[in-house]
Length: 356
Image (cartoon, rainbow, N blue to C red; front, side):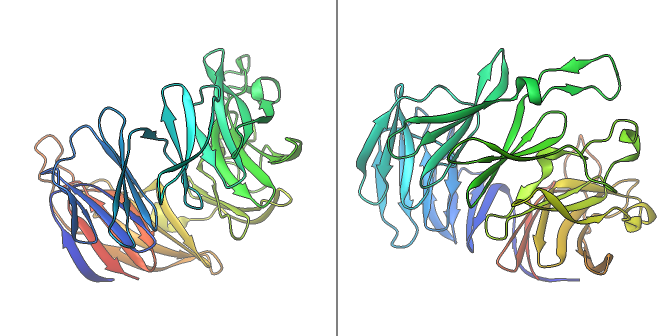
């Protein structure tokens, strides 16, 4: 069992970045590291970074809190999520995208991008998916500073895939998710469970992965593909793509698109009759940290799995009772791991902080 160092109750939402904890309570109070940010958060949302907090009010204006000195700045434009890089954020002003230096509110550039669905920003380029024929079929790249169009990739043809349950059913391709960037490549997940990597400057395809030997679920043996391409996480430091989905663990070198490690014998999941929650897992060294949501009245657990030794090295059991009348099973709903601490949220809106 791990050491519990803090417990918060009545938590409606939370976020953690670089050791900074943001708590949103049911009484509409928003706290950062036990400091009250606002006592009224209706119809609003927030995004936390290691040095700054963006708090978008209903209607589109944005408050920016500098977490280093506690200063606050008001920007009468709507901040675009996941666009803050190197002190610069992207904001929407009517139909124009405005690049603003957050520390002093100085406007750097204005441009008009095609409307996108998912966007990922870096210091030099902006990548976004956009619609054609009601699907996210196009991946586009723009210069971050000037907003100039660089290149695009159309997934409709190469990303076409067959429904594994209906052999005569062919679907046009779609960009499912932008997974991230490593050095000079950007990696995306495409429907049909493909991974594709593109040169960030030219848009040339570097590699494509359709399946990995030894990592094909039983129900896909007759139509091999990745368990779930969109579940991969790209480490921007090491360049390793990692997936832990349906009891199959995969590591891929983002430079070459080759598999590094495959594990598919997670017998402890079957033996303990536990159901894996796929989205909340973290990789640190050889260890995977994740939680299981028990069924048949079994208690949920936080688990550490050693991928080098292929075995569980420790577990932390959570005991409790559901306080929700319509749901009688106690369960965990979310976990964040940050700087040696686990932040685990349960169905009763209780946040437990544990030391690794």
